Image (cartoon, rainbow, N blue to C red; front, side, top):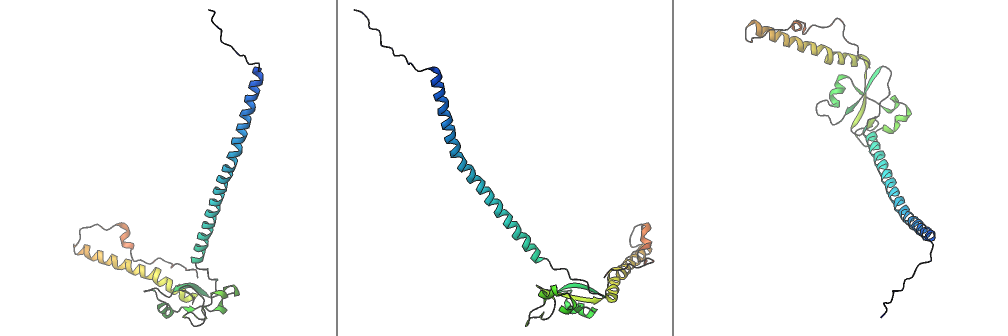
Amino acid sequence: MTEETPLQFHSHKSPKKEVAMTDERIRRDSAADTSARQPRAMESRDRTEDRQNSDDEAMKSFIAGLDAEVLPTLPKIPGYHVVWLSMTHQTDSIHRRQKMGYQPIKPEDLPKEFEHLTGPKGTKVEGLISCNEMVGYKIPERLYRAIMTHFHHTRPIETEEQIRMTLESAVEQEAVETELGEGFRNLGLAPKQAPVWDA
């Protein structure tokens, strides 16, 4: 009995054609994949831009809030020193400043661009230059310099002198065992010229 040989079929396709078809399929798949990735990339970029815009707006709002909290700089008034005083300060009260010679600044003392700071009618600051709880005040330059000299020159020297005298007395009575330094003897001695305070 003769053994039958299995039928064998041979492809007549050219190897070159198969490679070409494979390359074409790869290109189509790659193009499809790229087109699918583009919308996702655009969405990601849009989200990033939206987040950046949101951050920028938040920063602008934050800076605007800081600017709103800062007091405007009062312009100079010839012959006067100008300053903002608080109506709520417990120790450095406006009444105390008025006794020292401070006077409220009025709208006519300043250029027109400061008119919007004029206190409304029916309030404690009616007709005065104000911002929140602060009120603009002025004081003659001669009084300002006298006050500054007293609080920042004369009184510190007097305090130094009291410290020196107290320690000298303690050393003389041998109440303390210490050696006074070279600069100690200069405490309380006024300099030849007092500082000049700019108004």
